Length: 142
Image (cartoon, rainbow, N blue to C red):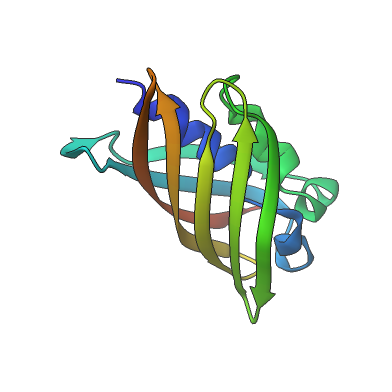
């Protein structure tokens, strides 16, 4: 199953610079639970990642999350971005072999992020939809 690479590509791109002003540097735990629309009983299970965000990373979290990116996701660009009162919504399109198209909404504070990102990817020549529920929390200093 290729759901995990699509999931990782989605994570790598979900954290745009628009959130940077309100995120705190430090050790962050990111948990993602994914569901594939075509196989509702299939789950990658909660996937946990731990990342240390420096002050520079907190200004652009995509720098840190890009490290978990799948090589098939490249040339990602955001559009339809709105950031209002701790809620960020966006659409994103990536070139590459997955031809990833995502839309999502993330709520955030200095110490947490929660949201849902729905991704449609070209997996084995077929469009595959994956819904990712994302939760992140700051654990403390690095």
